[in-house]
Image 1 (cartoon, rainbow, N blue to C red):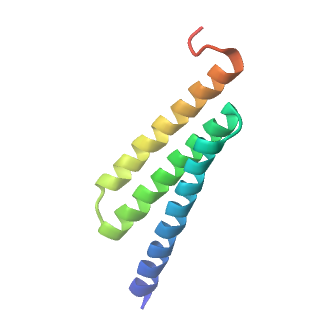
Image 2 (image 1 turned 90 degrees about the horizontal axis):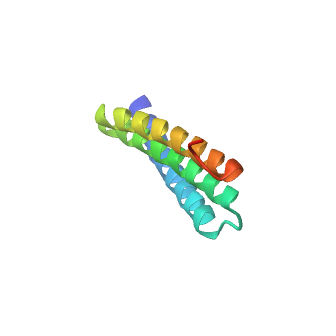
Length: 93
């Protein structure tokens, strides 16, 4: 019984994360300012990481967990660099 509930919950979570990923992509494409686009890209990284985690849980493959960690690290660095660029106009001083 609990395995059925877990499969249903993971399927629902994947659908919700894909919807959130599409909405974040919309924000990147239609954002009125550069700051909105940076936040959209950050949300896309987080949603991609969550999608990889749910796919890894469904398949039972540890590769997806490692890939989600790489996505999280790259997303953090990219967001920090983009924020610094938007504030100061340069990344490396």
